[in-house]
Length: 176
Image (tube, rainbow, N blue to C red):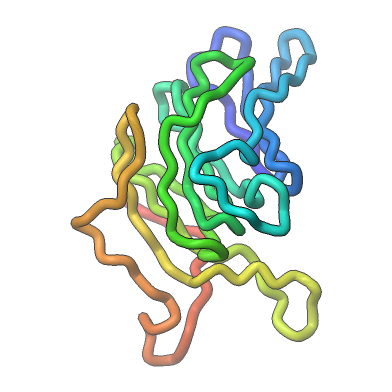
């Protein structure tokens, strides 16, 4: 679903994930190798869901190049990994919003101190086959090198009730 270059990496490596296996990989373009570096099925606390690994979604990477942040759509979690060893990532932190809450889009602020998370992926309504709805909320997390935490200064925005015209589906975000 997503690929992120590792900032400052001497080999120009990148990280990518597979949404339907929960596996996270390091890709090295200098030698053409791909290494399975993490399995989201091992995240603790573990949440049992129909898609192995919780359905890894979009990625965010602080400029330090030491951490990887991602949403697990079905598991309702946002995780942070230590990626300093490109062959074996380690879990640093996880924030849980509840099974099927749907964290999908994750955006770091310009200073890498906060993460904006939207809970919605795609729903084609009655005409389609895709119904990854999420709970239509927007969260903000504090980001530190040692983990993620809910930002108590930010009140969760519920797009089901935020507008008088009816529910909305928050997919991506733009910020200044």
